[in-house]
Length: 435
Image (cartoon, rainbow, N blue to C red; front, side, top):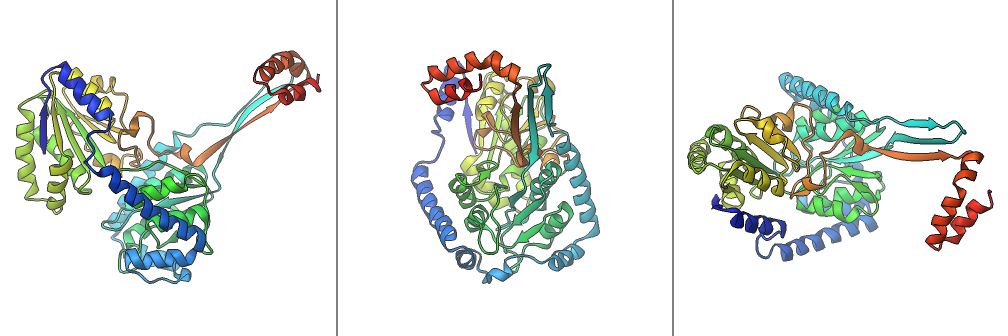
């Protein structure tokens, strides 16, 4: 884990410019990304052209599982059997988490509206759910029932009628029983044991077996993310998810063990996960690193954590708390843990973050699993302009107008002037003939 000590405002400006220009990326990263993009495009194009046959081919190649198209879909009996194998206490935890997520996302929903003026003109907005969506649940190296809930519950709250779930067959040629149990609890309409870029292409274009959907959500590896980018011209996507990340903004009063816990928890996701500490305290990083070394002796994924922290773990020691806040807003993290004397006062100055945990007593894990907010969040500084997945992401808006004759007569000249100024005379004429 590297430490950058920023002694003055000039150095801070230099660090900020480096971050904004993306110069933190590893050398050769762009060339590697182009190779990955080319590989992903080949998969997507093959599925678009050859459908189920290509999906089966890539499932055999990448997952080591031979499936006929008729075996892609997980039958309801298989889902019920998987549900029956899961510990009842764990099922109860999933059900309670689901309810928290449902209640939180139900508060997000906007209402349709209509307004009729005295002259009879009607202006309105109708909000309707998407008819069908596809959700991707990763599962190549670990199993994520929480991602099932975070994808499906908001779609269900939004009123989506058909929810298609895909996930890799990486558990003995099947989807892990816990993931299937979560799909049953959350209300997936259909489940397919296919994953990777091929499953994204299948949901975007449709195959003989897997239906096409107008929107795809859910995180995945770089090939899933690039596939989502490639198909976004034919269906909507939620976002391009990058490596998981956390910034801990902490002062000298922070508990080093609680700071270290958040960095370790984020780093255990993958070797490319990002864990950052921003602090005005020169002593805190030393204490945090000591705790990290102590905790690593206890954790199952210690090697992954070490690799992540060695590659992407960073400590920024800044002159003051205001500098820490400014740098955090530039970093625009997926997860932000504010561990300072007055977390709410600092939070008032935060503009860019996917999810914020206030105080050392609030671990990121409470939002990852249970509290209710969605854990599918913008990464890679996208929190500057993007938001967490919400129920509204599964709905769309139709604007409608019914102009009265009186209102058209009143507004016609203005409309015609504007249309004529853009040299769109047919627009102006369409109004003129109604005068």
